[in-house]
Image (tube, rainbow, N blue to C red; front, side):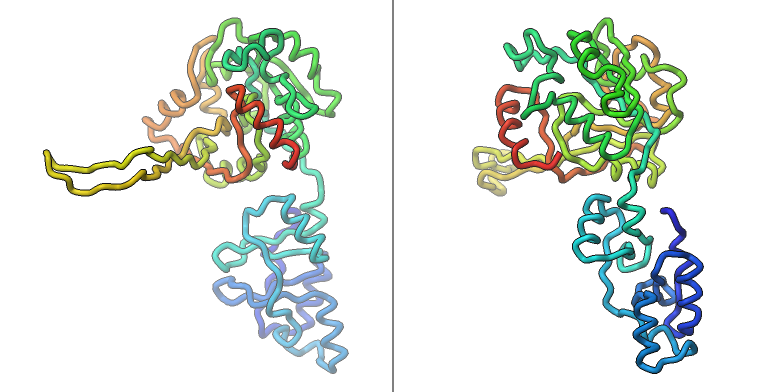
Length: 350
């Protein structure tokens, strides 16, 4: 955050004079009134103070007499675009962020509306053959197939660019020249794009070994180039950093309904019956954040898939986390998925 919210805390018995001095000193136009456990009791703005003085209160009066005891708040971790939309709708310049009722931050419209830039490398996997999408991929790499009026990979790139990411690496194998020709060096998007080429398919994790040694020493985001999603990548990265994770895998909730009645028994005796039960699983969404340690562990031209790579670190008791995503997500692996994407793109915000 641009400012330290801990500097704008008041107790309800503090004098109005303290609130005015604090608001003026911190330039946030707001102070937060909390109890000893940091639970939010109210907020005070300079407008609240003015209205109190017009009611003949004095600067020695307590802030509890002028504070708004029912302020609008947001949950810690709310996506930036949601905060902007909400704050503009409610005409708020600042909003307290709560976690289980306790003050955990403050966002200002000036900060959330500002365009942040992330130096974290973003690795887009674009080397697949797209075999299941033939004949569409006979003369076109799958990442360049258009959904709406843009190639799949460009939609993914745009999502990262709008979130403030500027350093991109694209892994190629099948028809690499077409991908290079379309994206170039990234100047069209005011970002940097470099390429690594797999002479032979190395799996979703093996291409990490081809990355140059001088890339930023920051957590790297790796995304399959055929995933259509509007997930908030900033929140994924914040989650990874907050938990000091070695790696974070994005996962989706997946339901499967058994089409028959399921019988549970002991020997030949039926114990229970469940008619067409629904089973729920978390499935891999093809989006990862990996630490520099994991990235550097992959040797050049070694073949390995990301799940296998993460399993190796899990066996060493590394902190590998999962981040459930609830936003739109579609793996465009089959013809029917591609046709569905053409319909979905019309109603989605990318």
